[in-house]
Length: 518
Image (tube, rainbow, N blue to C red):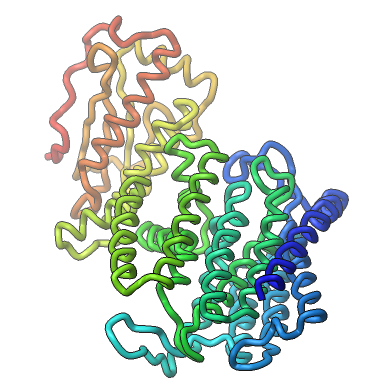
């Protein structure tokens, strides 16, 4: 069956090379473009966003030719199966709701609903996880859990690829490496129908990458990312079957580990932060790599390398002895732990800190600590002092802070006002009040602002007298002010040519940090 698989791979590749420019041209004429917004969408000019349509069409065309001319290729050891035609139908439904979202936007729950229905449809047409192989002994029979686990697998993988589709060529390239691994797994298990479908999709993805790699002339869109993840979930089920029912767990999980890792980290971050699970942000793995200094192209190539290594490890668990599986598992856990620490997620760092201290996580305190950790990063990256002040006020206001005042020495104060004249803050400056009450604050903090040659002033903060406790880690607030706001203030003072070392020392030393007002 290798010649048949190679044929559909080439056919999928050539079809996508031809269809993608046509789809791109149609999208441009109709105005179906992804337009840059300067925040999450950083491409320079509008780009067609329905490229996934050409990937699905090429995949379906290649498989259709296979069914017509080599019908024996769509038969597994269990006999001829029409379930692969059902897979095309289910994938078509997922691609369609993604296309609708690309064109007119639909709610996340509407997309999930279609994915759920498509997954249930496939479950009753042979795509079932009924048992799992067990490295310790007998098979793990799922029984009544078979349906929910199968549906969760389909919906989870579909959305996982949608989440990593944030850089040019990333989702399509990672999916390509996954199809290689899943094709090899299907071939080793003699599931040639699955292998041929994986080959068809792999060819289509490779052809699409010709136009999608940085700088992309067309995007995969929800139409493509949702469909690709859904199809790969199906290949993982049928291609990794050791028996008629049991799934070899390790191989497909490793093959698809990169998108699984990203979606799991995203869900955990949002639960800790207390935001919506579907809320868009710029904290995915590829965003973190950009913050570490990689260019978009280098970040994508690096993640391609990760995907290739994971695909190789996936095959090693299939072809190697039992000891290989354990070794791979241990190495994988260590790499995940190191990666999480290196990527610098504030939410996960805070959760790890609380777990290591054996405390029951207080969601409010944890969320506030995460806000302060993120504030420090936002202050350092602020494009101007007005933006930094607004970030500071927004965060402290959410912590029940009642008043924030920036007290500067006279010479520095004049320089700061000159800086602020270029970009004015939305919040009152230099003294912001959250309410008009004159009651004595229960907590009053004064944190000094350091200049190049000494203290240039201080930030004074009063907190709600109704609060029994601060509700956050004081060290995080201290870091945000001294290593974030103070550094940013000094930077803009230097740009205004008003070095702190030339000012008089007329301001009295700040009060002791964290003193409680009497």
